[in-house]
Length: 134
Image (cartoon, rainbow, N blue to C red):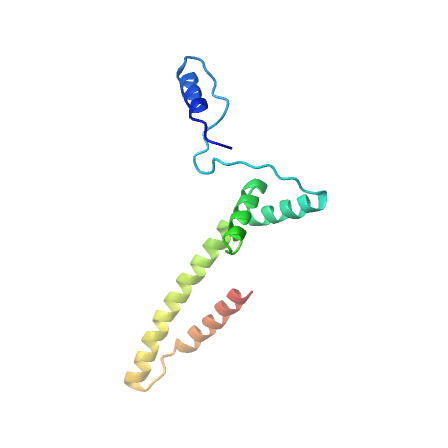
């Protein structure tokens, strides 16, 4: 698709006329367009991959094509918002536990006595690590 200044000028003049309809929408981000054909099997595979990634077929095809051309990894899967919230909460808990463990180790080093809540914290860490592994 070549840039045609004369056609551009006609579109701009037409768009400024009252009641005019501009048939070609502005494509600021990706102005170039191609048409691709797929077999039924290829279409099924590409549609499924795009769906798993949370993309439209066109967007996924463009992104993976650009990534391949630039020798970069393909676009990542979209993580569900609930999963992100769960990970954020797990991270928050791990930070709190880490802080408490640091305080406990400081107390052990200062007094030589193990605080009573240390076994509980160690158990919670095991649980959280199991959840993260899952």
